[in-house]
Amino acid sequence: MKALLKLIHFEIHRFRYILFGLMGLTALVQIGATVLIAIGDRMERLAEYANPEVVPGPVSVLEPLANNRGLYGFPVLICIVTLLLYVFLIWYREWFGKSTLIYRLLMLPMPRRNVYLAKLAALLVFIGSLLALQLVLLLVIRAVFNAIVPDEYLVAASLADMINTNEVFQILLPLSLEFFVLFYGMGITCVLVLFTAVLLERGRRPRGTFLAAAYAAGMTVLLVGTIVARAASLHEWLHLYAYEFTWILAGIWVIAAAFAVWLGFRALNRTVSV
Image 1: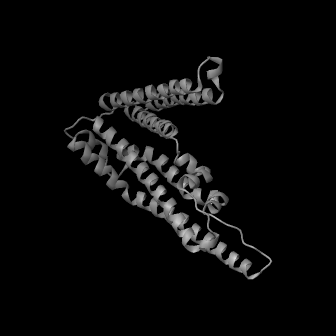
Image 2: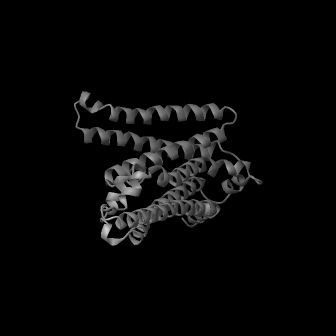
Image 3: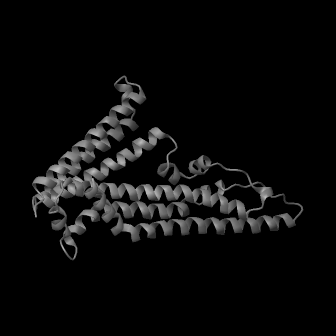
């Protein structure tokens, strides 16, 4: 366990500057946009207030979130794309860096699966950190907006309302525990599949490329098929309740994740050599 924790710390330490950069970009864009929008709204309302024929209406922080979805979602998209690229980089840099670090990692006196688990745990830490930051930023955005706009025009908005107002936040921070578990469970399964595909490619070169592609394609068809089946209401044809069919599909994702881990461990132990 101590060796695994050291590896996790090592992976997080290597990514720290990119992680802090993503956090800084997200905070800068979202808070900066809120300040500019709130100041513009305040100036407009003060101008309207000077005209007795115009009565300014109430406003809440929900309006900038709803009317500027792309602006608030842009840094989130940058974070998602960066983490997707890092799923591959976290493995391939060990082979293509200045020194082939993978050789030293695999020769450490510990089970090789620790390398796999450390990289997975590090990615989960990065995702959890960015999600926690986004929750905090929503509270900061509300506080900043309420501090700039005059109190007499403000309408209270809950955190749940803020999340539901913007589709990006609805996907990123689902309010339903069931949907949260299913959504992020699917995401982790996809990461595991990609990890295993990379190890298959690295372990059986050059034919490993075709093996990894075939594995990834097969898993994609299976997993996307479950989503299409759910969207097409296939449970009605099978005479199942919707929640029963959902959990059957969730079970398929769990089996796919377990198979990916097993195959990844096997490839790491038997085919990835130093």
